[in-house]
Image 1 (cartoon, rainbow, N blue to C red):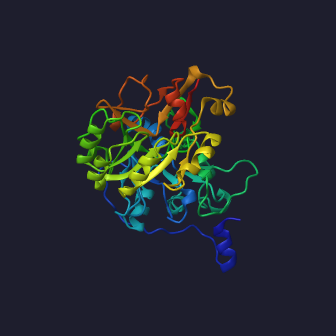
Image 2: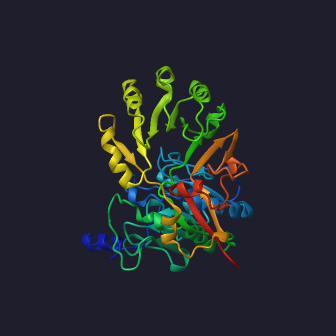
Image 3: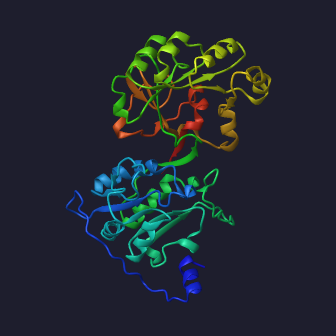
Length: 400
């Protein structure tokens, strides 16, 4: 039973098409060629927050640019803006949001306010469902031909109805499925030649990491509060000091950094992550702890090696053990993969030698344009990529 029908049954009310009072809001374009987009909805429902909207718009952006279609993001004040949208979050009343939806070509989003308003106007809708099923909370007043309701639930799987899920089932939905549904409803050509094969657990956690071969002067251009300085990739205390003079940094290292440097720049060090491989740095880490710096320990060892080591550090700090993904582990789930047809995108922006790359692989020679975003790159069968799989999106190219 749909929740509208449940409300009607319990209140003895008749169900009819709603009247929605809308209020004019100006946009910067003279045409109505735009879609409305609501990615967040009620704050309590973490289970409905899809992690890969930027991937969806990386696919749609070139198609929309060709068709002169804009994206207007609606929602509450303080919600993050998805790259490539016009942010109207917190800038409109509910009535003005209704006006935007009423005049849009299509509404895209999660199960929330915008979907139901769009249904009242009988607009085209692409909506994502996870912790509830569309039969219970879908767009009630819409015609079937005008909607694409994408559920993350597998066959015979019951919805959780939970505010939070771990892992979130909504993240099972592939970005290309959403993008294709939008294009199909708008009757425009869907042109994307890749299909998602694997999404790393940390891919959605977009990061900017610096290999300290040179310090970064224009760090504010990246829109972050601090940088992650990867001293484990290139150990250079001089560049480290120069960067800490300019901005706050998180330091990641597997070698001791001079304690006098740590003490001098303590206020600029957001955190210091020390990667341990053996017991050789225990004395140093006791001294590092005494400086009062915000310190964390991490290991990438296998379980057997880690269990032998962890008691040695019990008086220093707890250790987060994150075994690295390996080629063998990947191939267990993808044993029929064709490496000649494999591509990837990275959740990490790597700055090294004053250029921007998608990985730490020395075989990646072509810098990227940060403003244009990552385009799929040919997958390289190398250790740097395999060990970084948790932060990668693996794609296969469709064959004609």
